Length: 555
Ligand code: GLC
Ligand code: CA
Image (tube, rainbow, N blue to C red; front, top):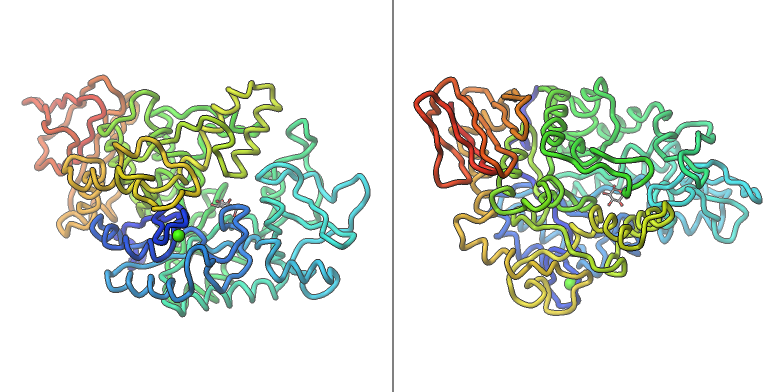
């Protein structure tokens, strides 16, 4: 594997709308991010991925872009963005933007022109089909519910949208579309961007000819995945994009990729892969049901361990996965991966260490470093996210009571991760002097940056230690490149593995509140991390692990 500049880095995702509001309008913004760069540098972050801040009607919170060459005035100006890139550079940090090019917004000029002249140049930027009364071109269900087909305003045609109807899919088969995408990527890279996170990219290749697939719910529609499974040849697009853009700049790219086959991994993230890296979603997709969130299975510690090890085994040393505990599309990881009732600083640190020490590039989502938790939503009206609203309805349609449906919606809602960052115990968690666009988690009085900065034993301080270990010249080679091998793999509620390069490290986590023991063959040379003040180890090398104790040992 060729070594790359980004391998030893630590990445952090910012959801701009909810990070820090500099002007009191209740919406986070780029000047707000700039003012917090020192906070991120103090934590040890090198790469910052910003969720979209381009002009957008915000139907899907910015994942519906109406102008790829600007910044939405709510988030700032292009000059602010340039300043952010420059200020980051001064701190040896890199900025990634979000590349959302499976679709644009229906308010993008291309789409407006397609409506005016569907048979002209811009009609071919989208997937248009003649409208037939009482019949849709295909029976595919969009990710956010309902059919993927919508009337093209002012015409007798319909257009395809695999996400929301305000997110029309771009026709990647059209070389002119691809040229536009490459031009835009290079334009941003020329401004000094470090690279991109690439949104929903597996959707750019459709299966032709368009046809119906077996319906999987009573609505007579089928999951969009049925079509994607049949789509062949996405590699041609992705390889072309790499060669025409990222490769020339040695830029970092991380793909949002789902359902790839193990044998495709080298193509995606091998030495000359389409992307530098791609996210590991094996844990987040665990337990999903084709019926909807209401039918999803809760993940257990043993499931979590299996998911992580499965991914690690699959990738081996072919490339680097990007490891996450959560992102803006998921509930908070501590509320999901820690068994109900056990969420506390100790267990949060355990989850942090087990994930962070895996081989790959760690991504931290804003607030994760504080152990921010899911939100007690009291009503569906407190939720803004379109996909949660759809899943709430799906649950009701399946016969759940409104209380049960709200419980399901709140458990998996993307808004759990989108509430304002908790900076202090002051009004609105110190996020804004105005009224925040989305409610603040009421636990901000106890979980917030100011409190945790001062406390050497806080979750944030623990993250800081994890990051410092990754960067420590003595351990870096092992933490970054060391091979991973599961330890005591069959032991219930224990997740442990070794990392081996020039040094050998053991990461051992007791993933339950009861004590349990493991037996080491030799005494550790050093305890590098421990979320308890003490370590109980006897002469025979038997370690008595306390509830949710996690250790990083040098062997
Ligand atoms: C990705 C984004 C998500 C968005 C979707 C459509 O999955 O992460 O937030 O809704 O793509 O762009
Ligand atoms: Ca603002």
